Image 1 (cartoon, each protein chain N blue to C red):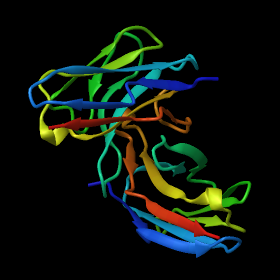
Image 2: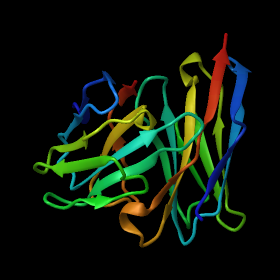
Image 3: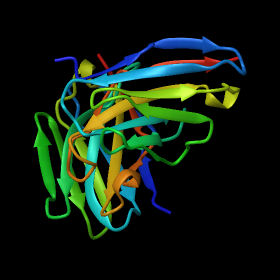
Length: 114
Length: 114
C-alpha cells in the first residue's frame, strides 16, 4: 500500500530560525513529489514539485530535496517568519495510475513564535 | 484570479439530510477533484473527473455522488448525510491529470453532521 509519512507531527521554532521537515514514502512506481503549505482554515497551496531526476528545488526561502533511492524528501525553511506558521503536506504521485495517483501525508504543523 | 471557488464555506446538517457542495474553477482545467480532510489523516480522494462528462470513484466514494456540470463546475452531493461525513471538503483542479501538473485547491467547506 502506498504510504507517505511525515515527521515531526508538529514543530515550534522562533522567528528567524531555520527548520527542516521530513517526508518518507513507499509510493511506487514513483512519478513526482510535491510539498504544499496549508494555512489554518485555508486550502493547500503548492510550494514545489520534483520529479525523479530532480534532487533539489527552491521557492524563495523554501528548499525541497529528494533522494529517490532512499525514498526520502525534506523541506528546509530558512529564516522563518511568522507567516510560515502552517501545516506542510508532502504529496507523492505514482506513475501511470491516473486519478488514484496522489498519496497525501498527514502534514507537519509548524508554529513560528516571535 | 478566483482560481477554485467552493460554496458553502460552512454547513451544519442533521443526519439524513441532503446537500450539495458546489465547486467552480476559472483556469480552464480539464481535471477536477473532490477530497476530504480529517484530523490526523492525509487528504483522501472522493471522486475525480478527468474531463467534462466523465467521473470516477476515488478512495472513499461511499455516500457521495458527483456531477461534472460543464468544464468549470464539479459538484459533490450527500444524499443522506451521516455523522461520519463530518469533515472538511476540498475541491481541486489541474490541467490534465496529476502527472507533474500543479493541483489548485479551493478554500474548503466545513461540514458538520449532527
